[in-house]
Length: 207
Image 1 (spheres, rainbow, N blue to C red):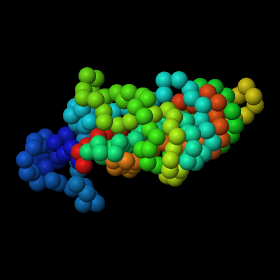
Image 2: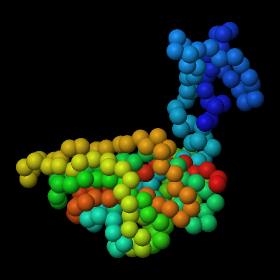
Image 3: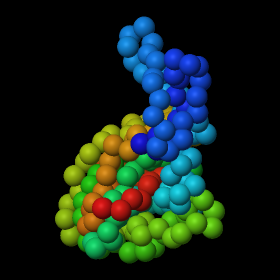
């Protein structure tokens, strides 16, 4: 936790803590410490140059499933030997056209085998250091993906009616961590032809 970005409430009133400072916290009626975050939850990581994003810049055609075969969509891989952990904070997607078929959108995990540096990640501190991650919109998987989390049901009405949701942003709360040699990829159970685009936001920290 970037604790130096928190405002702590002490018995003497509000006190903005600094690194190394020790103060007595007060509590609410349930004996929970009162801590207020300052400047946004990703501010410290962004200012340290640890936050990155990557996305498709246009709608892509996805394959059905994540078998050990050709796959397309968006994937984020932590290369073998990178020396970092990738903490995935957010996944998002947009719908550009009427769905090809109804189905689901999920996230799956696999290895980094077959991945390439097809999409250049962007540091959220513009001008910050480059990412060590690989972002790719297509690869030949040597290890079948395993579905980790369902994201959305992809449905549509009449031929001229868009499905819902057409835009999705999902906070993963840092609950998915990729060690070197591991990746997370999009998974649609039905082919979607030039309909969806995807994005990830993540943090990179040393092992």
